Length: 153
Image (cartoon, rainbow, N blue to C red):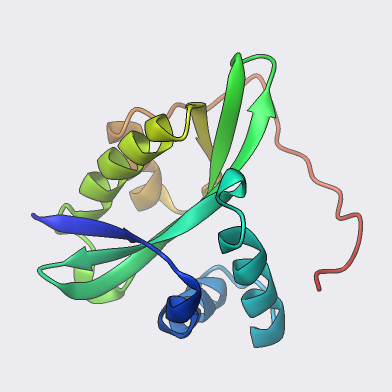
């Protein structure tokens, strides 16, 4: 399967917004279009923060993947979360997800990222298998914990 990743630009926000809304609905995330638009604008305005890539399969928009960069003493440099990864249903199960993960690992390396992390729902065993094949490993010794410091805006 041939795919192409294209780094999202400001003039493509309207292209990605319906995909982000679909992903948030799929994951039962309660966000508004204003919140999603604001977050996307913040992320793509500074490439040091990461980026969003549109995923094309045979020149047809198939989904998107977002990386958000941080820093890790443990991993010796920059790390990043695959913050969101969404494929439209008709593109699932065709190897596009696996190829996307390989290409995003290459993009992350270009950004001097030493480690990639992601979250996956415990019930989403299909995605867990995909991530395991892409060499993501659970860190059973650790539990990801979160505190939201302020409402999204």
